[in-house]
Image (cartoon, rainbow, N blue to C red; front, side, top):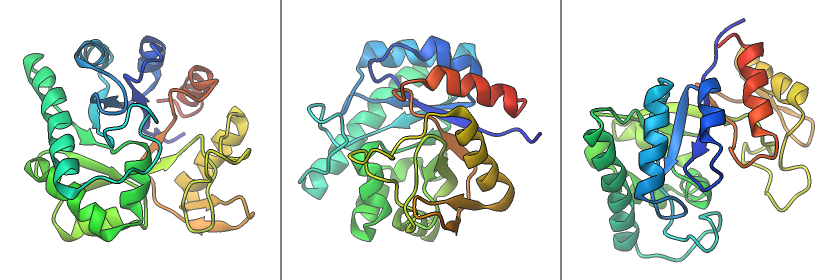
Length: 238
């Protein structure tokens, strides 16, 4: 069975990183805007180093109230400043530990918004321009951020979601809908296998759509996230 790359969003206050890290290949660490602080970044980075997990930054809209999962009105300058402050905060700790940043993955509403907005994706890329030739940017397939990142010379890796359902336009089914999340491990395995082997994803409308994936996300706050990553680790002989 082919090996796959599983990533998890971590440092978000669930304190389950020690259980997740042995079974994943890359992690996306909250940088203080939607969750996390210097202490959590320190702790999670240490765990990532211990388990040889690739370290990623997980910047967000500055909105702890809504956990970064709602779009907010913010000026371009303020968003750029916030993203750069978040990146500087995590990079300082990574460098202190003589480690390396592997990738950047935006969080929540920011991730979804730059996927469908050319102008906002360009603002985000401006915020992380200093990382252009140094790290990967995790992006969804067939998105505005993918197109603008490639156009502007950023290195990307395609991300798909192991524990989320898709609409026909490859957007994620809203978390307000009952069928947004996938928790059955057998269903998740088949979900991944279709994307991995056929570059297809079955949508909630029961259609198969073309998709590319280099890494698969399992959200650390999915109710059975530990079970999911353990089983995927076993299934795909990671």
